[in-house]
Image (cartoon, rainbow, N blue to C red; front, side, top):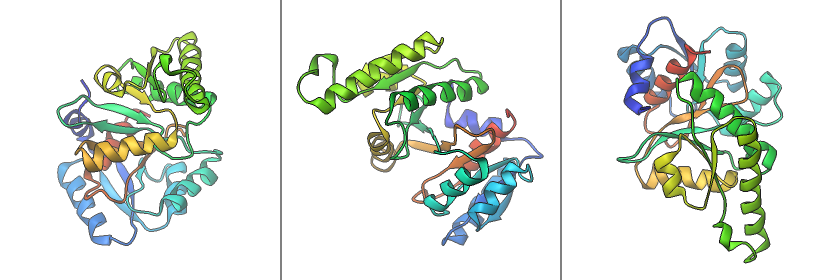
Length: 252
């Protein structure tokens, strides 16, 4: 079973070099660097330039990157321009208190709003989990139960989008189920949970992590062929995100 501890164990290897973004809190970045290096996760290079971090990742001067507390718009903009993608798609590794770890997506507020993007997130999340030797169960979420159709047009669209995404994903051989609004069931049974849209996904992330105490290792960018871990600036330490980057870097 995938856990925060199993990720840390996978990360304990030599020879990995990871770039960590530095914003206003330089001391926090220095502490994360020391923690990661003392734990044997990686050699850490600090960056205060989002574009330079992305370019060094693309050109393989570093093995992986962690956003740290660089400005989100600058960091994601640098990824889009450097890797030539129109939108960044991310999924966050979450482990609720006394629960199992899963990938949560979308976590960017502008992600996952169309059926096509939901299915693409399912494809990319499946690829990522398979690199961790897991054949994932994908749970698509919607804004209500199937029996709620007719109560409101927006709810109908949400329910129908989850149904359509599930049908497309399963037709492609992805293990996917429509969990409707029952996130409590999805959290117990799924390896990947795909929220109805980016706003609700971001709210789920923030509620689980900041209010519920769930472990949030970081959010890999799914649609580039390099390891870039997005993080929240509210994290007190980036050591676990560096561990995640190191664990994934050896599999690409």
